[in-house]
Image 1: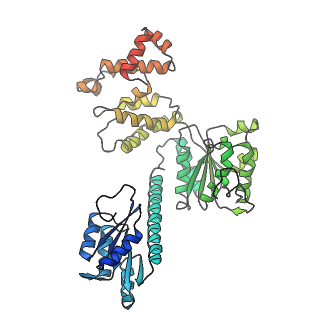
Image 2: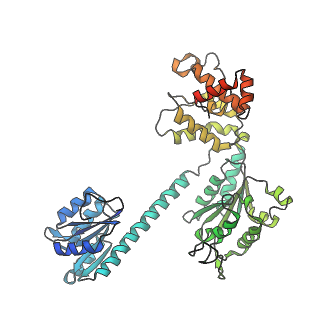
Length: 459
């Protein structure tokens, strides 16, 4: 492919050659082009700049002597259109000082004429690798920034205040931390808050869910393996411990750690050494361990399913997150926070009566459930008001007399159809989805119930 148009979908990289020697451009284009690379040519500085202004160019091969100016003077203008473009400056030996000027102006590298095509290919490949590394770094920096932004702890209850104090203490040391709490309380959030407020915030934060990986694979995931260590080990691979070097390793759901691996984990915690599967070479690792669990590890110790010495080693600092039902006073603040994040510019309002009803709910899924319910309510809402309690199957409560919602516009009242839909949903929730018991309680036939469930799209 030699032009801008008609580019096949496989092409994902581009290179622009700016040189007035047409034969030279054709030779370079024919040598460099392949299925994943589009090569474009321009025979003047003006045309080259126009191409850079119209589309993204990854690499530019820029000649020093152009019919309309000096090549090195174009570098700032090219980078103005895309600061990540890698400029490879091409110069003849007598004008070597211009190569220095080009590098100072932002060129990535330079080649002196005459050069071997293989030398050109190596320089171009190196430029593309640098681009890929920069993109990876930018993505990682963006993810880190988002992670830091999302480690805000919302609430002022006494239970959460104690958690915040422990986070501050844990952030200043590198001792292991054990975070306990029910599902959905935010254990991973606390782990990230510790990492991103510590001196190691710029180092890796790597997590592994011990319950999501089969027992036969988790050792290889943790410690890595050498090529040929077992059937299917076709290459050498680093483990999670090595990937987290200098940073934090989160062992999520540590209670699911297989018993045969618990002694090895204890040894790593004590000695800071690992050995890949199939290797005799011992590697030193410097990793801060944070573990989380929603299981009572002390009961597991009694049942001989979890090592007591590992438990004590992991819980040098222990943080317990109270369930949402024990800090209901934080619900209004959490609602405000989640709605501001989830509404994305929409005009959305949560009535005070809804907040009161949400504070009455027990939240078995904790903060995660609250966030999910608010998100669904925002997606499904019609008009400015959202009523997440309806999605929880809570019985409908009439507005008190004198309430602004009882005397305002008709659109703010539920229709009879909405009332029936919500009450059927509530009854199903009450009877754990049992259609027969629900129909009996509502005094309707089973076929009528099924017809209404289908009509209202009740899941």
